[in-house]
Amino acid sequence: MEDYQRKRYVAAASTLSKKLERRNFQPIICQNLLEAREQAMKIIDPDKSVGFGGSITIEQSGVIEELYKRGQKIIDRERTKSPEERHQVMKQALLSDYFLTSINGITEEGELVNIDSVGNRVAALTYGPDKVLAFVSMRKVYGDLTATVEMVRKNTAPLNAHRLGLQKTPCIKKGLCGDCLQTECICNTLVITRRSMAKDRIVIFLIIDEVGL
Ligand code: SF4
Image 1 (cartoon, protein in one colour):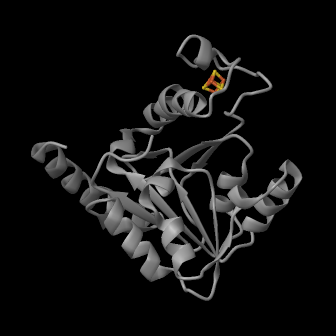
Image 2: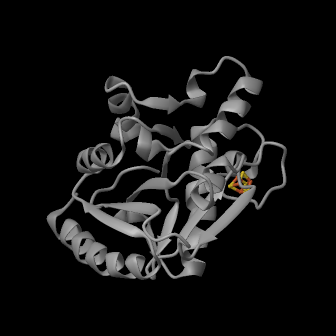
């Protein structure tokens, strides 16, 4: 990333942090994904359980591997052996002590925008785990709510559809979102989190780097 771009992200992260605090979120500015991982490792109590939702940013950070190395109890759907077991583990993760996730888009005013397929990720963000740790690149601060929802729907979701190798959705066939209602559709729940009821329950790691989808 160019130096001028980094400087802009640093200034924007400082402005956004104040707006996130007003909404009862806990912002932590991190220079890169490694710093975000280290901060998350410090926050997570080694004796408590951790669940996580599907996220490229979380995957890229290596935080799950680090947690396994120190013997953390992890509610891990990736280690299940059948769709039914996976489903049950995803439900258990909603009652974990900590939940790791990413955010699809943030408005300049600090509202969180997420789109989800099954809905487990946004369910955990909304209610359940006592602490949610969310990694997000400053690249995902898209503007006002309309612009952010549009970017999440028209950019992030089609990218995710390609990543997951869907076959029949318009975004796969034409490269553009067709607002589909296909069986394979991954855009089933669109959630706007404008404030947290519990102060500091949701920790937002604002990453001064271009990571994730
Ligand atoms: S609504 Fe359908 S076409 Fe649009 S991004 Fe989602 S899966 Fe693709």
